[in-house]
Image (cartoon, rainbow, N blue to C red; front, side, top):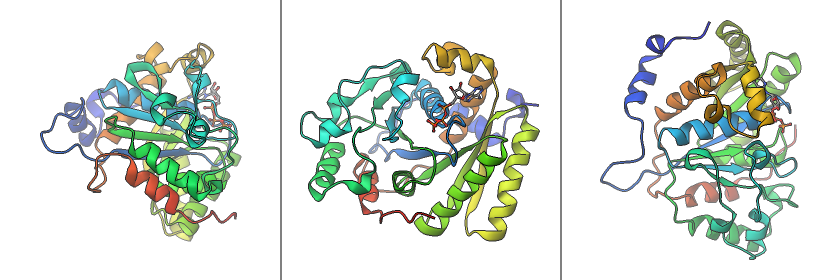
Length: 300
Ligand SMILES: Nc1ncnc2c1ncn2[C@@H]1O[C@H](COP(=O)(O)OP(=O)(O)OP(=O)(O)O)[C@@H](O)[C@H]1O
């Protein structure tokens, strides 16, 4: 069964009261950067990225969704957007990062994937400098950056994940998805210094099923790896979501009262309660610098 509003964890309820855009008087805190990854393809990683980003944007947070899947980019497809420019054009000096931005629902900003690049590690020094400059020049206020990575353990996935503040691994109750999620967690923790992973169970029948998937992953990770797992939440299998995918809209926009939309909203509230990074600057430079400092991935 899914928890009702009154059964939500206290930190969720507190976060619910704090929703809304940044309204402080001091400098804007740096954005929370969250990579969404999955061991196996087709488990719903992009659906989760798109819906979580939209649910966060709906709370008033300035949210940027970066399509980091350079092979099979489909954030734009799920949102029914037609990109004219992408990150490769920025690197070629043909446009600015600002020009690539597409507007999604609830003011969500979307950067379409760079086509023609297999991973960030392939960038030349000049391109590296170009990407840092491009992100540094983006004078948009951003509270949350969600990075939709590719499926699997490719270099681009580990690089983007290791540079992010939090990594959400999407998993379904399918043995291959669980095994591949564990393989990803292993590579991230063992070879890339990721110390904490948030697990999101997708397409489950109930919370009990989600908890079981999580408990299995936690048991084996605790035994063999030096990593802390956390359960960020579960999204039920939902035909409303399927209809929304067909209509190229996020389910949280089209059917906000559907079971999956309610689950995404609850996870967005939980993310709201995560503390932002302590870096001094309020823009994206720190993420990009971390991104480019990552060593080449070690394929396992
Ligand atoms: N909670 C859900 N309920 C029902 N269907 C779902 C759910 N989540 C995802 N799906 C379905 O799974 C399909 C695959 O989702 P998606 O494209 O997001 O997967 P993915 O993990 O990003 O795949 P890849 O990494 O291979 O691009 C979607 O078209 C959607 O129909």
